[in-house]
Amino acid sequence: MNQMTAPYRIRILKADPQIAELRDFWNACGSCRDADLDFFLFIVGIYRAERPHVVVLYEGESPKALLAARLETGHVPVRLGYLALPVPTLRILQVVHGGWLGDIDAVTSKLLIGSILESLANGEADAASLHCPDIHSPLVQAATALPYRWCADHCIDPQARRVRDLSGAPGSFVASLSQNERYQQRKRARHLAEAFADIRIACFSAAADIDALVRDAEIIAAKSYQRGLNVGFSDTPIVRARLGFEAGKGWMRGYILYLDGRPCAFWIGSLRDQVFLSEYLCFDSAYAKYAPGMYLILKVIEGLNDGQSGDPVRLIDFGIGDTSYKERLANRHWQESAVYIFAPKPKAVWVNALRSCVGVLNRSAKDVLRWTPWLAGVKRTWRARAAQSER
Image (tube, rainbow, N blue to C red; front, side):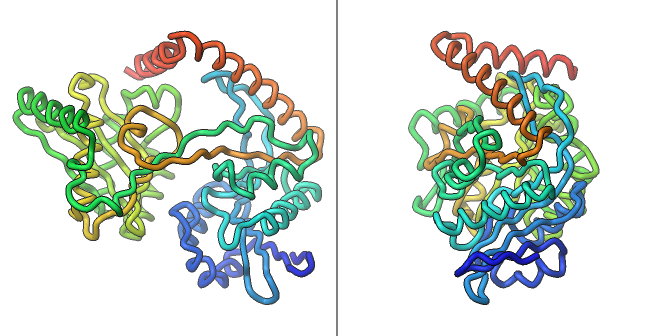
């Protein structure tokens, strides 16, 4: 499909061979892991996506910018606190994280989002989702300003994406930490040494390692609060397929902390272009007094910084969402949020209205609890109940 938007031309690519023709431009844009061309096509294949949907903006005969999306059937999440509410199934254009490549400015953003709006109006999908762009980006400005009010997202929920930039810190990673953080890590190491004769961290990076990695990670994850909330790591065919793909690319890095031979914490991520992207992190709460998760994180980052996995890593991406360990270890952050656009159709508008109303309730509850000591307690209670249900 071609659209003319003088002085630009927009083309929508819906087949793998067409998309592969953009490889040189795509790779030159320096995408993150999720928007890597091969990873993108792989994900389209293993998830129940109907097809890719790549919006390419040309200036003359040269590509200038693109949006990498896939068309799939699913649900727009609507949660009242931790409770997921039932919503109709929608056909959704999912723009992957980082899937806005090339020259993304105010002009190109309006043209790219305009193409998404046209696809929604034509009935190709019921909604579109931008997976967590920077909320201050021109793409978000276009995605919130251009749709009709009843089709726009009124539940923008900024969350911090925190990273540890290691490129400007020569020497030991541990030495770059605060005095208190170094003291706490020494104390963790001492307590572990006093309680356990064998303390070992194993790194899994090859395809042959996947069975052992998944087996031992599942032992830990099965007892976690994340499992009670149906999030986080799980031994599923899709997770195994993703690990297999990343192992084949040389990206997979899985770390498990063993105490006297028992797996008690793991950290699984991708190491690509000197960036370690955190994917799954979990520990067995039975060992909570030893802080095994934090001990493992610091030991892994120390090894990555020192080049134990090859070239020294320049960036640790802790992913979206805030927790205390990210605040303590990160030295840069920005705000991201999922952004939805809904088609001007009754079912889609109804879902947006429900989502907006629930969003108001959630924000009101958080605002009330924020002025009390209860918010953290409520979260801990939910998590404790979720973890208990899995034991």
